[in-house]
Image 1 (cartoon, rainbow, N blue to C red):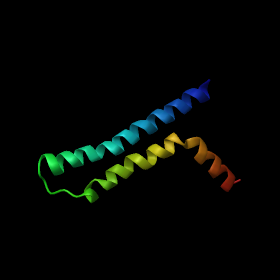
Image 2 (tube, rainbow, N blue to C red; image 1 turned 135 degrees about the vertical axis):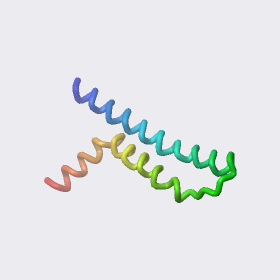
Image 3 (cartoon, one colour; image 1 turned 180 degrees about the horizontal axis):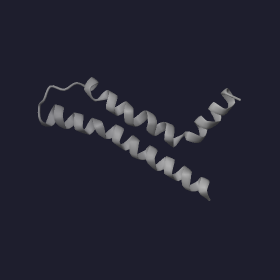
Length: 73
């Protein structure tokens, strides 16, 4: 029972991080096109990756645990 709750928590946190990472591009579009500011994608890419990469790791944590265990056992 505890493993199921833990897995759901990791998946939920991963989904939240993914949504935030992808949502950064909404702010980019508003600033760039809606307000006419001179912003580039490079200014938003670190924030996008900071949400998407850990989010995918949390969503697929069981897969990565298996890979790490095989590598270091």
